[in-house]
Picture (cartoon, rainbow, N blue to C red):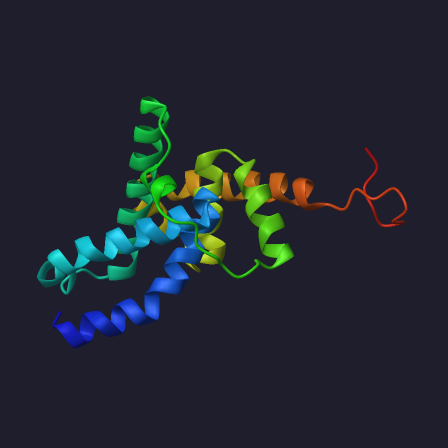
Length: 168
């Protein structure tokens, strides 16, 4: 993969991968940092990456692993993440429905959340999700089924004045 091909790959994938990782981990700034770091690593491995069948999956998996590693380091060390010492940045306000979806996804078990994001937000078929997560297809299907049911319950309207709302 030469420089121009890598630039095209980066340009076409960065926003999508950031959105996907944000849905998985629930922190937009962290998602952007991890995806950026994953692309730095992809650049270092660009010759190998050119031979990979799904380079975007490689970057997504690397970014997700970076996010998990950073979370563990931060949690175990009981210290704020490095970005806490940098100046505050202003970001555009998020779409309310996307914020609600990410908040609901955060309440799901990690494996269900990962399966839902990979399948529905990344548009990966079940066999590709199984390959990327290293579990059998049946396990992915079970996680998707349970995750969708839990997500539907979490996103159901709860307003007492709404006739279509679910009653608690």
